[in-house]
Image (cartoon, rainbow over all chains, first blue to last red; front, top):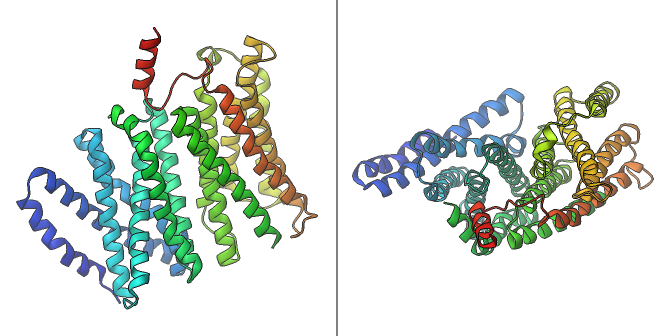
Length: 213
Length: 230
């Protein structure tokens, strides 16, 4: 049995110390990294509770419950920062990525403790796959919150729709990686291919977003 | 096997639509392409999730993840139609539009009673279909009245109506035919539905650049363009 809260405390302690020592920019990044890890811990509690309440096994819970819970939880620190501190919009993408990285890092640490760590090839694919998936889903939602749509009702509906895209993207990824062999490898490559595609597209639409922010 | 082949064709068609929408959205930077992309991509991912779940667990998903994605895709199609809405349209009242909620909710009750469908999802679906069909019918009637037979966005409204009709036909057929063979009309209706996604691409192509649509993803660019035109 893994005591993930103990692991969390161990990982969070140096970060908490660092938060008090760093300048404002680096402090903010560290806070978002820690928030991502905290949200991952809370998500695992909520997932376990819902799975237990509905009598689901781990695999079914990972493809039916976790995507929704994790994507909503991952969004909470960013929404809090956006609503309370009203930062400039150009900061939001970096903050979202940092939360996603914190989330993916803590998830990978928990995975490593519960699974075999001898196969470096598998871990390399998993590390890149999961990390990229969390970054992609975070960015998808943030794209909706950016001022791509200038009307409030369009932005709200757009953000809700993009959150749904991230949830279903995450759920499809989880189904594929829950199976061994080829399907899992396709699943891990799925977000990596997506992010490469997004980076190519960013070169074209990047100036438009920059102009808006 | 029939289910897997049919679903794979369905997903492949949607993937082609998503790729075309992406390329057009990036090239033109128009909001209409972005909304169509979101409509197609949500439908694509929900179909993919459903198919993967069916292949891996040999069962239907317990949660409503794919259904929610389908419903949000209707929302984006409604937003696409809202985007080309004329301000005068709000003042117009068409009594015939009251038939739409009667139809959508009556059919939903039928699905709940006859095929023991989930109450919550059927009600949500009826509500969203009401909004979508209302937007489609009202827009088509308003523009036809204003501009005559060859009104703008005619094909977009027609595509939306064909899509909604095929959705209802597919759902109804699925209540009566259950066998897994190509003789089941459900699979053919589903393939027709998949083909109807293609209709939106030339329809949006026609409205982009027309006087109905002048907003793009960057309003700054639109403003600077209008200034330079002026």
